[in-house]
Length: 113
Image 1 (cartoon, rainbow, N blue to C red):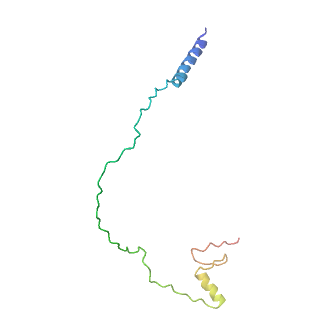
Image 2 (spheres, one colour; image 1 turned 135 degrees about the vertical axis):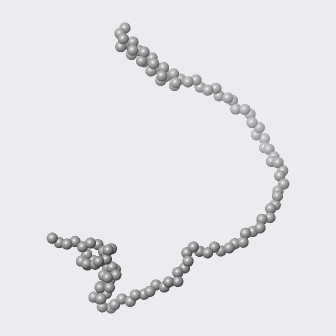
Image 3 (cartoon, helix red, strand yellow; image 1 turned 120 degrees about the horizontal axis):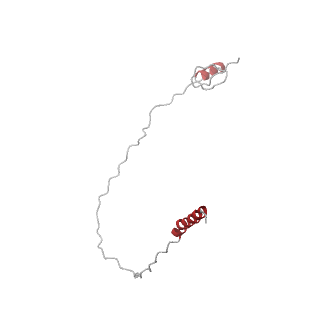
């Protein structure tokens, strides 16, 4: 027999020992369950103790949100449509793409080239 054939056979035997032997472990012996007493047992007679606890008085907790007494002011708007547009643009109520507002919340205007 050649050396390669012998090494192949030894490798197969070792592989079989490594793979098959741990898989064929003997089953553990099962212990038969012992008989248990299923008769109902009577609980011991414990005398009841009565405790008289004093009731805690109910107190109302102050609300963490305090009502404000500030009143909301009503702003009168002008009747003239041009003046109303100026007030709306200065207060940033209406934004148009054509307005040159200095309001930082207004969108930037694009210039044409």
